[in-house]
Length: 112
Image (cartoon, rainbow, N blue to C red; front, side):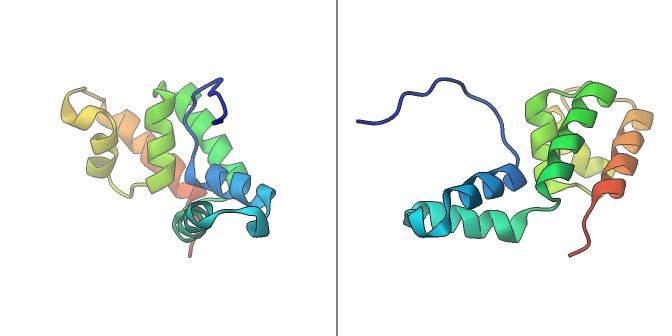
């Protein structure tokens, strides 16, 4: 019998990685192992930085949590890329705010 979903929330790729690693690779099924491999390859920041960055994007720039998570997952490098996550241009966002987000992302970006 499948487990009942009690709460739905958005998670970053680094958080997925941490969750799957905490289960233990030997206990993961094939899909979960693939998900862990994907998360390891495509995490742009570590778990702690990801959580902190989502909080700052929501608190300091008044983004929706879903938008902040998607931005953390991709760590865009230009204002145009950030706009794609903020309503695809349907929402007007001040350039100064976008520049602030870009500056914040640069502080957290991990060099791979």
